[in-house]
Length: 66
Image (cartoon, rainbow, N blue to C red; front, top):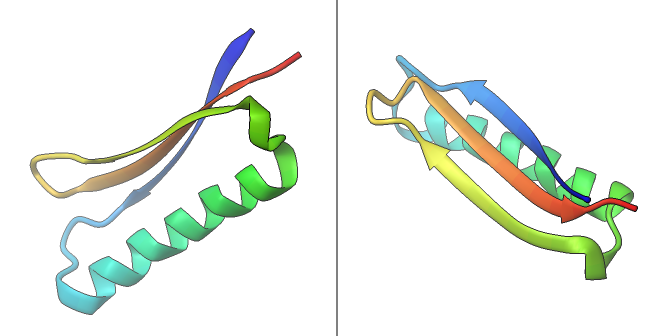
């Protein structure tokens, strides 16, 4: 079965380094999930989405789950 996990955070109203730090924290959280919960061979894809208004940033991980 293919499943996904999405990590989302609000970045609206932030600019520059503050926005980058929030995005990097979310990437780190997603990376930790991958390292601790998914076997390398089960990882399918990782995608980032930054919505047009800039309010939300998300990282979605698609992976195989037995």
